Length: 186
Picture 1 (spheres, rainbow, N blue to C red):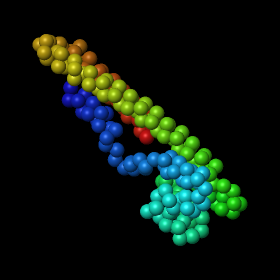
Picture 2 (cartoon, helix red, strand yellow; picture 1 turned 90 degrees about the horizontal axis):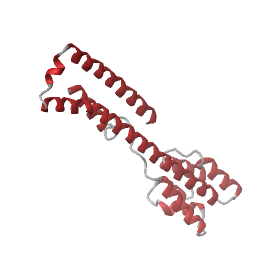
Picture 3 (cartoon, rainbow, N blue to C red; picture 1 turned 180 degrees about the vertical axis):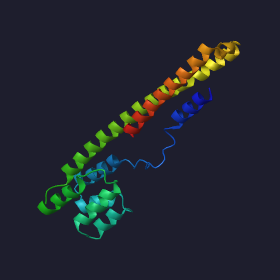
Picture 4 (cartoon, helix red, strand yellow; picture 1 turned 45 degrees about the vertical axis):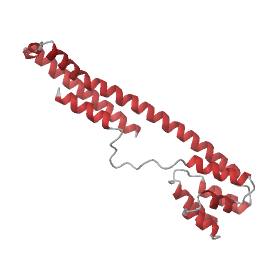
């Protein structure tokens, strides 16, 4: 029963204890959408970038007239380097004079798709963790039921011990599979 308790605790605590994993970045979709709004209002690219997050490094670079490649690299770092379109897209817009609004519209759409995928992954992961916790907690429930009904003598027989050993091995194998699957998702 103590093994089942420990397994249930590990599985349930899994979502809250993530060692070595970075915290999720702020929603970049909202940032891109704010820049897009500024661009559609008629602001220049540099002004739009500088207005949305005025305290950020890329905004200071844009205000000071630094090369757009440097602004783009800083902006890419600001959003966590997860979007590979920023640096080449802004360089292209700066060289050709093309409007940057379509780039930011595409970035907004991509961020929304990424956000939806992240929500789905979290939901599926939570469902798997809850299922594993229920499976890990079942032997505890059975032990309590046997204790309350004073049928613990059933566990003392040879068949009872064999059932406990086989059950624990199957439970450990099932939990190991769930842990492997959850690690692949993360």
